Image (cartoon, rainbow, N blue to C red; front, side, top):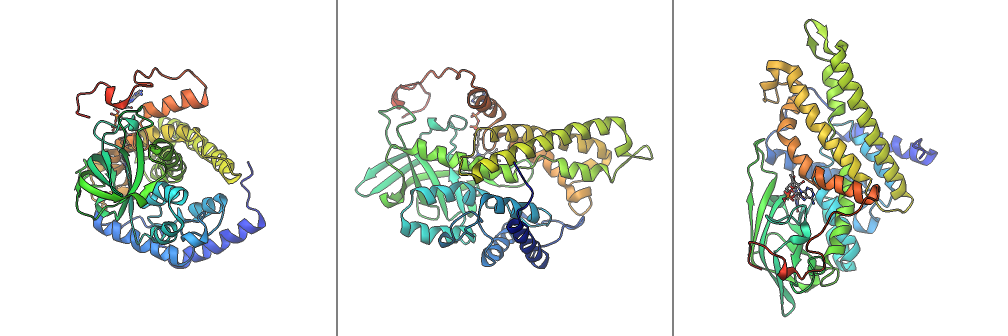
Length: 407
Ligand SMILES: Cc1cc2nc3c(=O)[nH]c(=O)nc-3n(C[C@H](O)[C@H](O)[C@H](O)COP(=O)(O)OP(=O)(O)OC[C@H]3O[C@@H](n4cnc5c(N)ncnc54)[C@H](O)[C@@H]3O)c2cc1C
């Protein structure tokens, strides 16, 4: 694991630094991000600018709108852009999760028409896996797709679909056969989200935003040409998406440490800089150790991927530790801020109310992309080699699995 730039990588870093200096917005302590709609428009404009400059989706081939570079170049880009106030991870679900599925399963014509528009955020994509009765156990999903002629007719409901209200397309996992085991009866498609029969209902969150949605399908049609992979091959296709999700979120999931480090340098407690307080120093040391550990294990995974490997189950470690730490830090930071912790106005609160917002969104980060318990199961089974947890429905036809719902 050597993270010193090679001469070629140093040259690329210099080029990126110069471009960002000329084009990106510097971080400021004041001013807010505005409404959710404004943040969305700002993100679209930023992605288009990055695309026009040739830095979008660094690892994708040039003919599909990428830069044709390596995973290490992508890390360099992420490190440099993180120094600016730009929403570079905003469309990570499309580019990080759906993009690889299209790249792997779609026809050449679909790839050349869809991927560059995804890279420039001209088209926005969402991932439609979770359902009211299928989250951790996504293979328990019930949204049905039935083949009529050369079209699939889709009926059912998805939930927690991030960004669906803005999306042009979605990658959707459906039940296509109930006579076989739950893993063998699913098929993956991409769907036009603006067509009749697709009804998107935003969910109001406790932080005031509506980032995710319920999506209802009522006889929505998908041409068979939009099938991604084999009929019944949906589980394998979904694993490919989830593996890429691990890789994509490992670069953008917050752990709260950099912001906490900044905060403690600016606060006072009983007339003394808070950073001199032994209890605060103890927390700082613990969280720094975890932050450094996550960074090292992410780098180890990226090195493996750069050498042609696949993102491994080790990413679950970073997800678990980072998401818990992010929530603990947010809670602790608000306590340190005392009365100021209650001020949510971005223009008045320290760090544009970062921790006030984080306290309300941090619980969601512990669920999104797999809950803490699911991460622990992955680490136990796939990293430590412990026995699998019992699966009562193993080998059973989907239609025979006991449930309160109709099949
Ligand atoms: C911010 C956010 C964004 C999201 N975006 C998307 C999206 O874009 N697309 C999408 O498809 N989904 C999305 N999701 C859904 C997310 O994938 C699910 O919330 C997650 O997989 C958990 O599923 P669930 O909510 O149904 O909880 P459940 O699976 O019902 O879990 C309930 C509880 O049981 C525990 N549990 C479940 N199974 C086990 C087990 N085997 N062992 C031990 N404990 C277990 C869980 O850890 C949890 O505590 C998003 C969620 C959030 C919070």
